[in-house]
Image 1 (cartoon, rainbow, N blue to C red):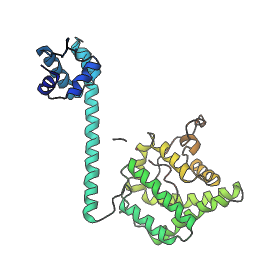
Image 2 (image 1 turned 120 degrees about the vertical axis):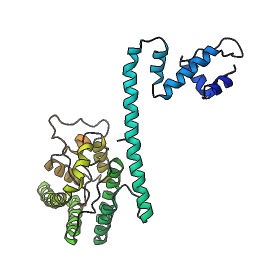
Image 3 (image 1 turned 90 degrees about the vertical axis):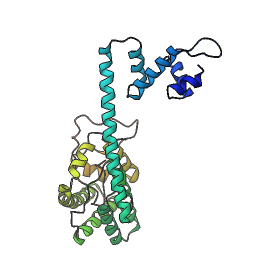
Image 4 (image 1 turned 135 degrees about the vertical axis):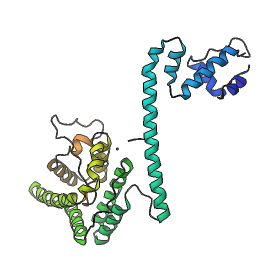
Length: 295
């Protein structure tokens, strides 16, 4: 047989056959042109059967080269675990697509940020007039989007946000903007305390909407680190970063330097406070504690 013929009979491609030659899975026939025999076809079919079952090519080679059957158990377990993870990922992807389809049918904007949270941002934005504060809110929305890409953020449709909530959120944004002009560390601390009063009140209102569960899993992975790094990029001003660090410290969240540092920065301090999941997103400032897995 020619290479095109053996590839056809094994339901694969010439390129794949040549790759198997290159990595030593399939012997190369002697002579020119290469003349493949029935034994080559039998091995190629066996390779394809194992590979399509989810086995790695390394494991396929070990199995075909007379490894005892017991030696294949770990590889088979790994293949099953990988397939199970793919199934979970596909189910999550299907749920997301179904949700997007519903949004599209309703005419809503397709966004990682739930419509209810997006609407709240819009209400706050209508109240703001200062360009600096509007920019802060817009950047916070981008951070919320980053978090929404990593999680399925809970919908806030069950939370009735009042005009007082909108006003307090606008005040929180104003406090964050004022941090750039804080007179000293005491002034910065006073701003942070008032900001956290607002933050805590709003967090308590949305705590029952599934945010805690969403962020708890996020804090176990690299997502919080990624989000804190994005927070550093979003608000590069030194005093605003000091303000954020102060708030994180009061909330027992690892600081930007501990989790959101760039490569080459000093490592996290020993004994740093453990990460605690907490709801966020509607207080006009950080999505810093949230994030998530991958496809």
